[in-house]
Length: 494
Image (cartoon, rainbow, N blue to C red; front, top):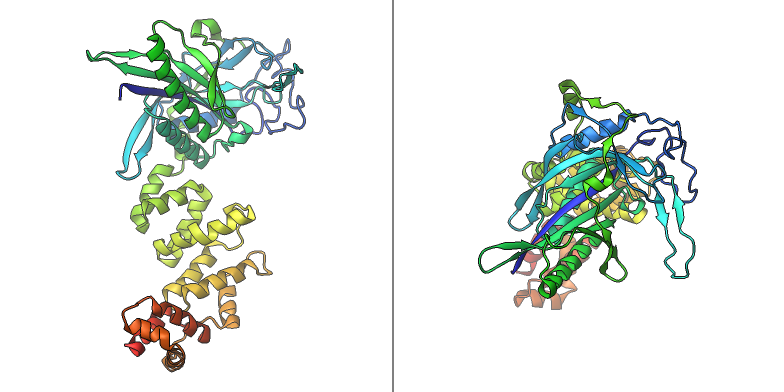
């Protein structure tokens, strides 16, 4: 390769508070009623004074600690000056030189086969208020642009990574892992469709010369990417564009200032927007209406104690504790905290982690997706599923019979069927494992007698011929163990 890709991400995450960062207006996503969740404070009207939302600062600390940041004892608020139609004050309350957290890292897995990981450095994670939203006429007919200020003042935490990512795939993996972590610690719903998680990607290339020198291409910031696939595609396009531009112009980072480009998902290209402002252009100064915040060691310890087990650590633990494959552990963890808790309760209850994983990642997950349900709304609670799987483990019923019971539990008139329902269904459906070998042997004898061709095929070496016969026997004797049936058939036909 003639170049190295250099990527740093700026991720904006809306914190899960009921009210805005400096006023009491609702943060509810409300696109159908624009400009209704506003007040003099978030509109920046004369005489209105901001008051810090304590919960937002608490969630910001929680985020900083989860991404291994230092939480300084002193942090302050700054005004970041710029004018956009969706920023009525003409400045944003943010943090500049003394952010609330800094110098952290997030570990990601960059190769699933070798399990190679990488620590991506995090420069800072600071609190700031969001701007409103502009909606522009994209038809080309010159219609009006619209401004919705409902989002003004919504609390954001901006997480700025070091330029440690080396491919679009690594960038996507970093975002996926970060989103998973933030939902696990319950600081944000990270709903990208509603703008709760947005990303800007800073991309350039280091062109390697024959003399060993590397020349950096101009840095481009791709703005407001709102899907993982969009981030990946935009970076891949920008890498290709910058390489072609270098070959044509030979312009370096020192020749051209940083610029911002927008991602056009329909056309699959980035488009030039404007030159990028530097810190001096924003004319930062401390906000005179807000007091600095001090944090004690006791407060840090208290917030740290609220953090749950991180997804990456839990993923590794599930593999070891329950002998799961990396794939199964990842599927379970990726479904969220409540789903992982559900799995662990089932696995511990039935004493078989692998069987529990099979059921929750296949049967349970299928029902959730088909019904549009969350695991907390699922009618079969973990103790009931564990009791059902225990019966399979103790050879009281077959796996096939267990699936019949599972479906009957889903159809139960009880909103939340209990463990006692399992035995009732087994008895009503005649699903108990058959221990009467006489009945089984009679059924095997009858099936063998009327399937001469299958018997001949088996005797000529076609082992698959026994499969169809097993099904016939089990239709005759409900609750028969397929392993026992197979053994009896092979013994009879040999």
